[in-house]
Image 1 (cartoon, protein in one colour):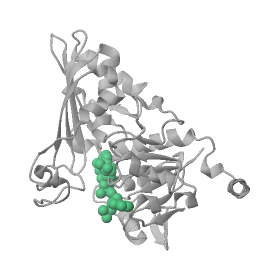
Image 2 (tube, rainbow, N blue to C red; image 1 turned 180 degrees about the vertical axis):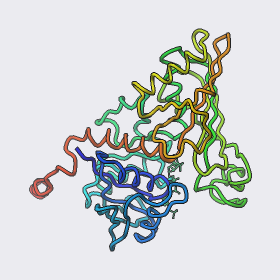
Image 3 (tube, rainbow, N blue to C red; image 1 turned 120 degrees about the horizontal axis):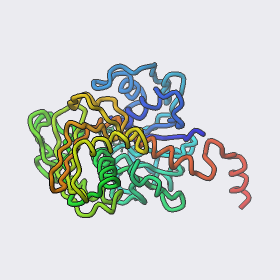
Image 4 (tube, rainbow, N blue to C red; image 1 turned 90 degrees about the vertical axis):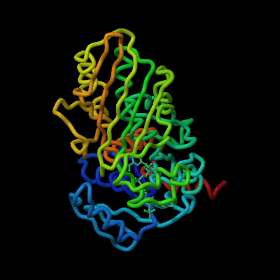
Length: 359
Ligand SMILES: NC(=O)c1ccc[n+]([C@@H]2O[C@H](COP(=O)([O-])OP(=O)(O)OC[C@H]3O[C@@H](n4cnc5c(N)ncnc54)[C@H](OP(=O)(O)O)[C@@H]3O)[C@@H](O)[C@H]2O)c1
């Protein structure tokens, strides 16, 4: 079946989603509508040209309020408030909320209550979603009766969680310490600035290309939401000036001392088996740009593994913060869309209208 998708916010994540779906031979989802403040013409341009990904591998144009991507049309809306977007007009089942502005579950829920969509996936570590579902760790806890607004947490949380999951399942894991180095984000500034995010922490407004900037993002709590057995965690988060390509490191204590070979074999086996698609394994010496366009949540780097005689372990994984995470958003959209009782695309609207008018 095909899940119909609407995307709110056609920025880095929204455009990655569009490219991934357009390039997949059988994506299982169809983007039928998008909403962004830019004109439809500019949205088409933003898809055609990309400084990180290169030219669009296909054709993109605009026709009135439609984007034409290869031979598919996508309705383009331009509403600032989510409650104004008439998703139901286009038969949208699942909205991916990717503006970065409506991260609160209550705001995102208006895509359902006002827009007529059926489920929402928030493209960020949302404030109060019905569930955090990290693919490969706890996504099977999705309950269609309880969860209307879900979040995959963040790209860094996904990278850390899949590595933690393997260690936890194979060797036990406690006293976890993590660091994430996240590539440059659109909200950062080219020159020092005191507006936007910098109001919470002035360091976040510092020039993006000049510094490694510490960020007080509470990544550990979300890893624990997906893997509660892990216990207390410490964490650090830094914004680094790479255009794309990020790093996650995790250290902790295993139940018994393990060797580097045991850890790397466990990761390789998980990448080829139960975590195929979300964990990848690359023995080649890797730097951050090598992860560009990798669709996994984490590209495990065996050269980063260290162990101690007392059961200490440290591991390293790379992630494409846009591409890997966008693939997880689509995985989640498929998961929630395929469990709808009757998808909008198959709903007989004339019957529904008759039922409503006869009430
Ligand atoms: N980029 C990453 O590496 C990454 C990774 C994981 C998660 N995320 C999360 O994903 C979300 C989106 O990030 P992003 O990097 O894609 O941001 P982005 O590039 O800034 O994209 C956001 C898009 O939404 C548009 N927008 C803003 N307000 C809007 C509104 N009220 N209605 C409709 N469209 C609106 C923006 O337009 P303007 O540019 O005109 O404001 C922009 O086109 C954020 O929550 C972020 O934390 C990002």
